[in-house]
Length: 79
Image (spheres, rainbow, N blue to C red):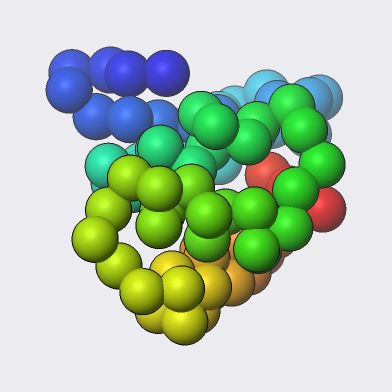
């Protein structure tokens, strides 16, 4: 979702009725989220999204994807 030119996602469910888990995404994380949300995906899948869109090598893309997914798991928006 985009609000005031910011890409955001909001964790849903009864436990988040107060909207305390609003997460802002930068351009590359929003690209990954939009490409892979509602699907099972791996860090390799996310890295491919990055290498397909940006001039980045696979090793860097995979490291960035793993870091991003760890943050999403910590935030409770992916399992």
